[in-house]
Image (tube, rainbow, N blue to C red; front, side, top):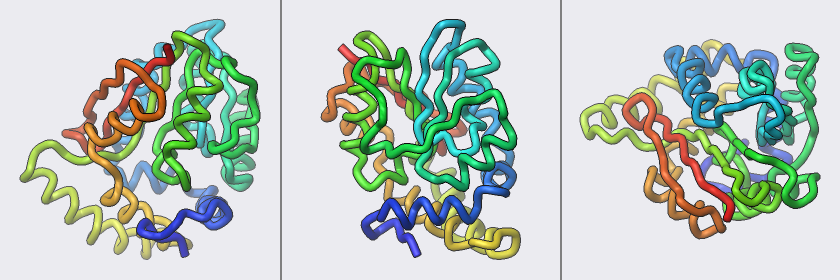
Amino acid sequence: MVRANMNKDPDDVSKMFDDVASRYDFLNDLLSLGRTKAWRKSVTSIIAPKSGMKVLDIAAGTGSSSRPLVDMGAEVIALDFSEGMLSQGRKQHKDIKFVQGDALKLPFDENSFDVTTISFGLRNTSNTSTALKEALRVTKPGGKIVVAEFSHPVNKFFKLIYLNYLMKALPIIARKISKNPQAYIYLAESIRAWPDQAGLALVLEQNGWKSVAWQDLTFGIVAVHIGYKA
């Protein structure tokens, strides 16, 4: 079983997501109290996709993050490590180009994309720094990265409520509705272990991204970080 406080073996993480692929989007909507669509809308607005823009959606899963980008005219490649997630995505979105690949060793040339983005996937890589450096490598000069990830609520009272839900209620719900509840227990643990907003901004800067800023969503449950390639 993958645990947040252990090394995230790529094969273990991939198998975990293979196991939950068929119900992944439904369960995410349920366990996030229906906020995933609103978060996705905010990320899309920040990316501002348009015709001719080349976007690499890293850890795209079933393509739910890629869908609105494609619909607004961007040329999108949806990359994921899990073949199970990609297979489900191909069934749901026949017009999206899905590619199996590793975020730590992207199968693309330098300076290939106007935007690289990763939604709720950076946390699952075994090496955050390598993933960010790889994203930087394939991004064009002047291009940007947009990272949506679970973060730390900014209000202390709300943070207490949220963490109680995350660590207590979420695993209970997952055991009742998922065939692989350990995947969601891992999710809860990995969120608690993840850096806060300023901490992730520093990691982005340390790995070559410039002018890093972030936007909090839902009181800081999620933060969207933006950085630029010089």
